Amino acid sequence: MALRKNKSLKLYYSVGEVAELVGVAESTLRFWEKEFPNLKPQKAGRGIRQYTQADIEEVKKVYHLLKERGLTLEGARQALKAPSNETDVRLDVIERLKFVSAELQAISRELNGFEA
Image 1 (cartoon, helix red, strand yellow):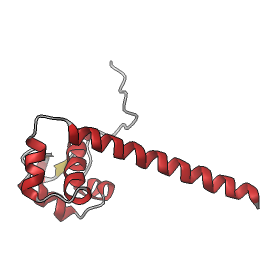
Image 2 (cartoon, one colour; image 1 turned 30 degrees about the horizontal axis):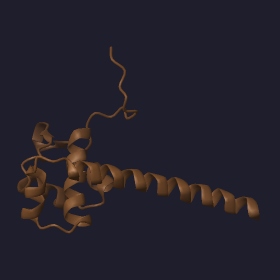
Image 3 (cartoon, one colour; image 1 turned 60 degrees about the horizontal axis):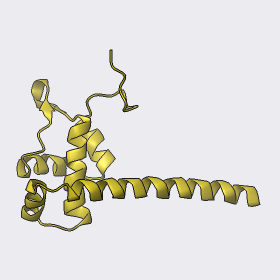
Image 4 (spheres, helix red, strand yellow; image 1 turned 90 degrees about the vertical axis):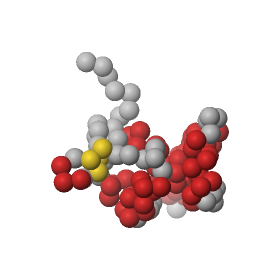
């Protein structure tokens, strides 16, 4: 049995969990599924969406293009079709910077506690 590198033991996420993780409404995710062919989570019985980690990465790409870069739906579709991985690299850098920022804020809070 292969050891999973990803520490997350969860294989599937609900639409609500993904919406909360990304910071958008569930209805926005359902709309994006209609607009972007690369967003196709599996559907279990009764049409319940099941997002994998790969699906969540695709959602994050769409979020980055639409909300952070401010592209239109058509512009985001074109960016996702482009052969270059510029979007992937930018998204990876942004995720790392957010992580570093959170860590620095936590360290700052701890240091402020020692000054009291």
